[in-house]
Length: 136
Image (cartoon, rainbow, N blue to C red):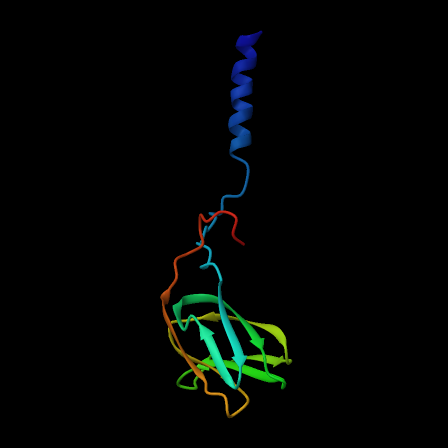
């Protein structure tokens, strides 16, 4: 009896293995993990740290310590493509600007003409987040 069931079981297993999707699965690397860059507006001055980092997703955490609402703009230094506006950052609050940067020179500036813009240098792309555990 076992001699008859063994070939039938093998045939069934091989038939089931042949079923399914034949398309290949592309397993692209994840992007680099986002980094946090802090920015503060204090006493009429914009401070950013760090001002140099690698290309990839960036989250600017901005605090406005002035009595007036301020709008920030993150743009390429040459004024071409790549402009991101923050919206209004109310007094004594924190806002977030999220951008996906590419290699190049940028500038973070406020809509208040008395606040000097800050130059930001974005270097080569940061490494992939592939195989990093417990990171989004």
